[in-house]
Amino acid sequence: MCELLAMSANTPTDLCFSFTGLTRRGGATGPHKDGWGVAFYEGHGVRAFHDADASAHSRIAEVVQTHPIKSEVAICHIRQANVGEICLANTHPFIRELWGRYWVFAHNGQLKAFRGSRDFYEPVGSTDSEALFCDILNHLRRHCDRNTPDEDLVARLVNLSRHYAREGVFNLLLSNGEWLFTYCTTKMASITRRAPFGPARLRDADVTVDFESETTPDDIVSVIVTEPLTTDETWDIYEPGEWRLWRKGEVVQSGRADARPD
Image 1 (cartoon, one colour):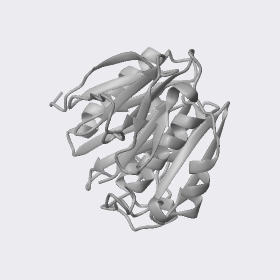
Image 2: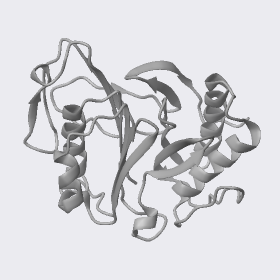
Image 3: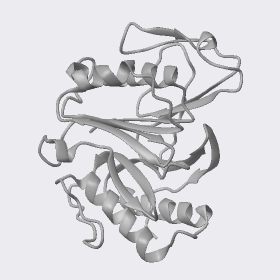
């Protein structure tokens, strides 16, 4: 199993704070030591870092923790390998282009028998997660186009997620840079920070931040993660089968799609 982190409409302080907490779980306070990766949307581009080593001891992770990156959507993943060898090709998040946009995907779970379609998109590595990502994009490419309304795209993602969840654990983060789609079968939690801001203390590191001194009254930032990162904030726990669509730090659509037969 792995751990996920996503941020919507984030500030550099929120990003460094949350990323620091998550990376400690990669080989220090947690067992997820088999590689890590993070992707930040910056306009139409994506700044990505990947490492096959444990994030808690990664020099690259140290650079990211202290680099003031501002991004409307960021997706991070720390890996505990269960399908596929430990190598750079198998580290999340995975990135592909579709309709002139970069799509970023990370998955927590296990669908051992999953192979997926072999169409325009194919996996580079050997994980079930990358095969799932390619299968999703192949489906969207076959049934939609660049002019398909977001509501129709999201409806397809919900149905696909429900289908995949019948085959195993499927906790999902997926973004095209404009929005972030999340789906939970087992564990996922979120928190939205807005004015008036207060302090927060990490669960996995001796770090506290006073967000009031680091933000403006107009800032809104949401953090979505496998397990809550802080000890002194109230996190909103997803229900199994719950999905949410995030845009600029806010939930704009949500619902339930339990893994039941069609």
